[in-house]
Length: 237
Image (cartoon, rainbow, N blue to C red; front, side, top):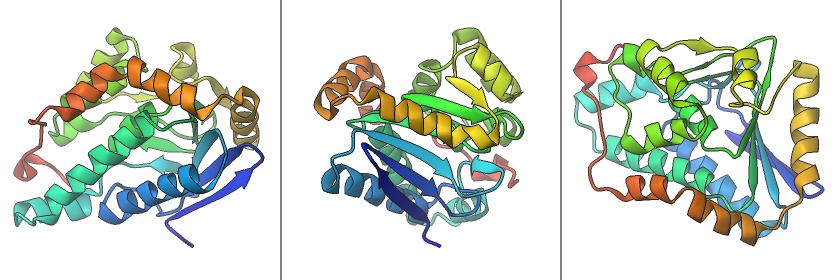
């Protein structure tokens, strides 16, 4: 199975992330970016729905099993990876069509931040948490990442999420409007796809609106200094 698969369903594209826990590494980020380019350039769809092929995980964040040892030995691929990860986050934030994350399982760390980059989110009720465990991994958030989280959660929950590493359920996230709807697994894709199809908004206007709505995040992403982390203080989990 390919790392990334996608297909067209009327006016939307449905993309499936299929690399197991969908951890962020060079291969995953590269193939996601290539798929997003292909969808934009070779189709006329005006919405994107992203799910996971894993039975219980949407994305578990950075591939620390690879990244921590690579950073310890000062592998130059680490710089490439961080640039690609930032590029993928930005691509989704400013993708010129409606984007919907169908959270078919856990979204942790960078995976949770990536979910925040989407315009809308749906989530299954029977399995899966959204969690920002960076406080326990000793990984600080880059400024733009906190801004991305703040676009989706009220400030008191941003603080709780970052300072405690709490695992949020679909019910809790529906109550604070982080997700649009909590669904059973049987209904999740139906609801996500129906919602995306029903909007049917033009690419150009959506793209222009995102440029204005998220200009503050774009400015932070363009800042020269971004936060990294010390691999010696980062446990591999």
